[in-house]
Length: 238
Image (cartoon, rainbow, N blue to C red; front, side, top):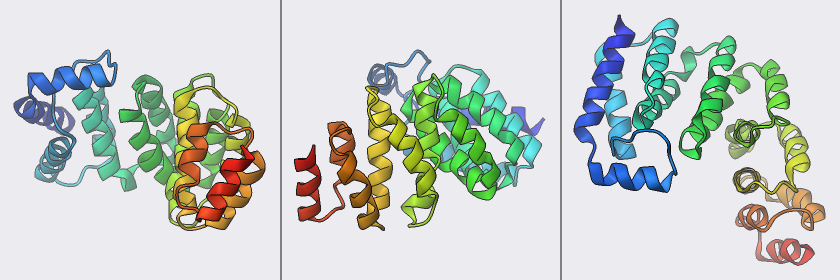
């Protein structure tokens, strides 16, 4: 099968590029329970693209099979490669694949896998099929903070372009604003920061009345693109 061959080739190339020293450092930094090969992100992306080109365009079923094959082995770089394959072939995904993506997100348990999956892959799918917004609504109240973070980051792409569903983000972020979980706080600030690069007034008007409720990490990110006067007003309101 193409999927098995592709996964095996990616694995072989990743092993060849890894180093024990980097593997140890990454495993410690990410507090990871997975095996690590110690491959740099540029090398990982290069390997995934090169092997993908060798096999030609992947059909939907081939893509899903290859991703599943890579993910099944608990190695960090294999799972990173699965995310890269999804990102590189995201146009071939269908709305029903949200179930697979949710499974991968639940099994990720690290920003190093969650963030690309949520922002680049899920985000693309939701933009193409707005009905999937109901899935994000469910994720936004999930017990798993990585899934809540994913609901926020899935809206990042459109908002970063000066478009997107700020109303939906506002609902999610407002409900999560007083959370103690760092990765949720950081995600709210990250999305606000990127939104403010195109629409600073929108973000300023949203953040100012909520400054006393927001965490420091959220506000520090959110105000970065704002004017000096706006930053002072927000930080003073906290």
